[in-house]
Amino acid sequence: MSIATRSPVISWSALLASALTAVLLIMSPAGCGGNGALSEVESLVTRAQEAGEAIESYHMVLTMSFEGAEAGRVKTEELVIDICGEDISLTDIYYDPESGEGTVIQEVVRAGDRQWGKDFSGSGWMEQQATLDEETAAVYTAHISDYLSNSIAAQKLGVEDIAGAQAVHLRFELSPENLSSLLSDIPRSSLETSTGGQVDIWIDEAAYYPLKYRMVFRNVSLGSGYEGVDVHIDIDITSINQPIEINPPV
Image (cartoon, rainbow, N blue to C red; front, side, top):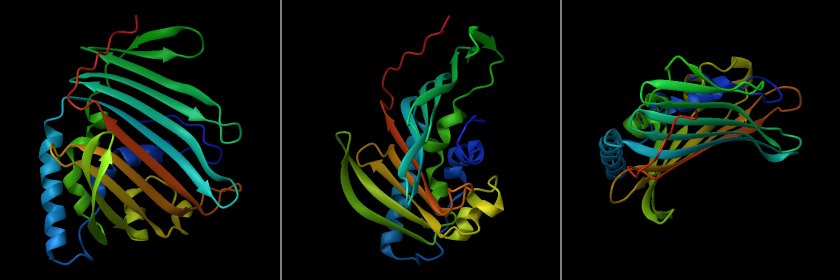
């Protein structure tokens, strides 16, 4: 999926696309050894992988923000996705980094074998080729085991309450090399100063569904005054296997 964005320095659609495939690319326990803690993480991830493959519906919110020493943390984009079987609703919102004002830049709905996109020039909803499918967001719920393919460290941090559910908190550390491989679509000049990153994931202790992700890519250079910022991508998943109604917009 390609997400349009108007971030102030360079186009970060590639970064969002990379985030949507992050679960497929990152982490092998190079620095973790074969200890019991790692075995427990592997077991949890395997269970989450299996549970993710059984998910039929959910609501997901992905938020991207930049954080720098001068401006603090600034929200730049939000992606809202509802999935119910093959039916999908997607809304992409751009946030002006100066004013904080949000503008919807993309809306797409797929219901059955038909798909509509919103024309923001004034024509409203228009039917288009049905290209959106559940794999648009399923990388978050169906490929968690790949988090163990390139990490320099993996650990279990305990059990926490996430939206009323008890969830196991896992943390994976990314080296600069991991990050460069993960964000292969981002210009190399933007990642030359990077010091790596971190991915946290919370897995439902009872059902093993993934409930929450927190990713940070540290010291990324965006140019035009946005040098050495941290890029944050936050993902929250709710209403898993609950009824979600997605209706044609017209």
